[in-house]
Every structure is written in structure tokens, then in C-alpha cells.
Image 1 (cartoon, rainbow, N blue to C red):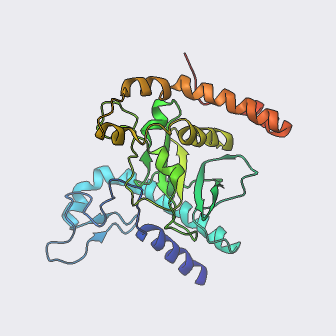
Image 2: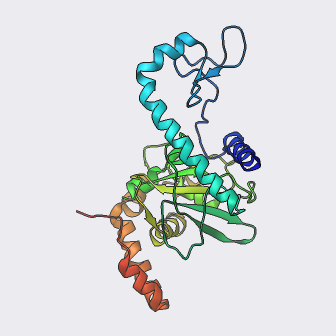
Image 3: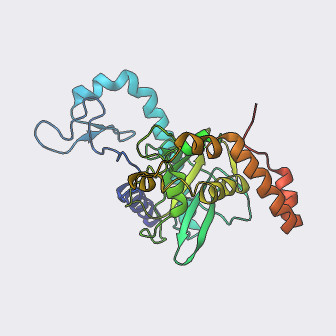
Length: 286
């Protein structure tokens, strides 16, 4: 019983934390069918007994059933998987969210980027993402990774690490890559975004540590011209946005950086060189 209570409290904490990374906060406690936040009499919403989908009335629940019945089965399975995952973690006395392993195992379903006071960002491996986590509405697409040919997604990662530290690598992964956008070069995330994040491939495939590291290095080192575009333009300077995009924001540009990083690492470490040989570049050029 004590373990079950811990699971429930951890799930509650994961659901109630303040997500500063999602530009479109998820609406909570609204009826699945009609979107109202409460029942007609003002009481809290009721929910599906099997999967906890919220409804304002039995009529709305029945109206949604033809569509909901398959979703209900999937949500139940995901919740069982998620709870089992946390139960195993409790048995090992590891209460961080989500399940992580040391970085020396270099292929994972997703990775956490954890800021540390006065230190470089830490990468933590997430060996397995439950269906509950993988299908969460909290994931945010990262357009800059899409135009570079390696689409990734980001989600805030609640846990015991400090949640109020700036995460410049995650902010830069949110770079707006479209020259026609008024905010070209700025981050899609607000200045209030902070704390650790999870990163996964948009196609759901496993991701090697070196693949994510290459993308993080690229946006930090090669895109450092972009955040200041609006500031330079506000001072009357002419910025050729199309030239910047053509030079920095293409799969070919990222592939060129990938090859240089691979060669540099191999020169510094024979072991890393062997690993690089086994890692496929996610960029497929025509």
C-alpha cells in the first residue's frame, strides 16, 4: 500500500508541476466532448471509471463513446505501463522522473538535458518511454531541428533536480528558423522557461547520444549569430535573413558540421572514433 501511495503522489506531482517549456499550456479539467470546465451545477467534472477521461455529464460521455472506446483501451494500457514503471523505480529507491541511466549506455528512447550550477549541461539517458509519456500532449516540436533534417521534440522534465536553473541549450533548440517570421533567430520559448527537459526523436526511434550531442553543439556553436538578429535590425542595421538561413539552416550545413565533429572526436580519442563509426548520421542528403 505504501508503494502504491508513493506512485500516486509522484504521478500527481508530475501532472501538477508548472510547465514553463510548453508555449501552449494544456487545458486541464475540461469536458472531452464539449470543453466546459465544470458540470452544470458547478461541481467538478466526473470521469470515465476506466481511464479517467473527464466529462461534464453522462450525456456527454455517452455521446463521445463511439470515438472514446478505442482510446479508452489505449489509455488504460498506458496507465498500467506507467504505474508499473514507477513501481519498479520505487523498489530500487530511485525516485527521479522519468527512469534514467548513466550516459555510458549511449542509445536511448529519449534524453534529459539537465542544467547544473556553474557546470556544463548534463545528459541523462531515458532507457524507455512509456506510452503514457510518449503520447503526452506536453511534447513541443522543435522547428529548427526539422529544417536541419533531424526533427526532435522537447518536453519539460519534472524531478528532484533544481527546476529554476536556466537551460540555454534547450532554449537554443527552440530557435525560430523561418526568415519571414518577425521573431526569426529568437527562441520559441519564453524567458521564463527553465529547468531540465526531455528530448526525443519526432519519429519515435531511439537516439544515440552522439546524435543529440551533435545537434546541441550545432545550435550552440553555429547558430550563435541568430539570437541577435532582431536587436541588430532594431538599431537600423541590415540583416540578410535569407543568407543566414541558406548558410546555417539546411541539412547540408548540419551534415558538414557532423563530419567535422566526428573527425575532431576521432582525433582526440580512438575509443570515440570507434563509436562514431557505428553511429549513423540522421541526415540523409539527396
